[in-house]
Length: 138
Image (cartoon, one colour):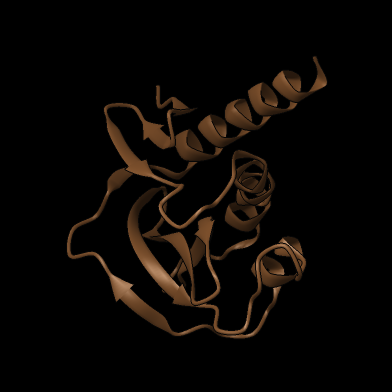
């Protein structure tokens, strides 16, 4: 079973981790972005289409996982999408990451960060969202 956690500026997927706060993305912003992941995955046809799960933002780029797959197996690759014009603390984070316009991939990592079953990824995202909600309720 896949588990996703957030600790010390890292997003941890099982044994693999990636930093989310490199350009000043706050934990509160990360929680907002993670809140969109499940719906993005469920809404995507996945056959030949990429889905982007954002986890970092600056005034030049959105750092995201590019999710690709066919059928039940998906792979996540870290990418940087252009976001020129976004101004942190002035523009709405959610407006920027939910903007439907196509974005150019500026940087794509060579290797997949993670490969897993789509259903396991959705379950892990939902469990993480519940933990993040309950931690902010207390």
